[in-house]
Image (cartoon, rainbow, N blue to C red):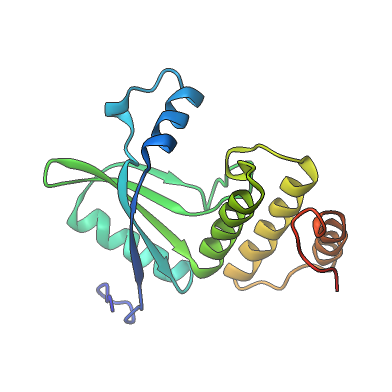
Amino acid sequence: MLKAQGDAPVDVFVTQRLKKRSTMLDKLSREPRMALTQMHDIGGVRARLPDLRAVQAVSRRLKKSWTVVKTRDYVESPKASGYRALHHSVRRDGRIVEVQLRTVRQDTWANQVEDDGRNLAVGFKFGLGADEIHNYYRVMAEAFAALDRGEEIPGKLSEEINERYQQVSTELGRRVT
């Protein structure tokens, strides 16, 4: 339970995340100008929060309590894949640690992309695989973002989700209903 000044208590689910050696090597090959010492996401934590308001409350508290050396706001500026979260690289005990703040929907989306990639041995997370699948992930991310903002999913977006799901459901190993 976390409570930032002036905010209601928030339930936070926090997990440790350590980048695997193979993932570090893959990242270094994808980003040849990066040195291992520049990789701020080798170790970190991920906090799954109930909503965007809670993400912002935790972000404010981090900025107040810790030294934030870099922020990447994928909520305001999502990755091309549709990925959304707020990442802070913080200095803690002389080390840089990445803190990822996600809503439940953002976390669900990211985990599904990773699970699908693992199950099909395709690096969807890294932009590999069929364009149709990436398009499906993107429209799902848009829908989740609308819900996170407290909006209804527009009818046109709902139709697009259904169309794209029909296109990819067999490849992703899901039943079409």
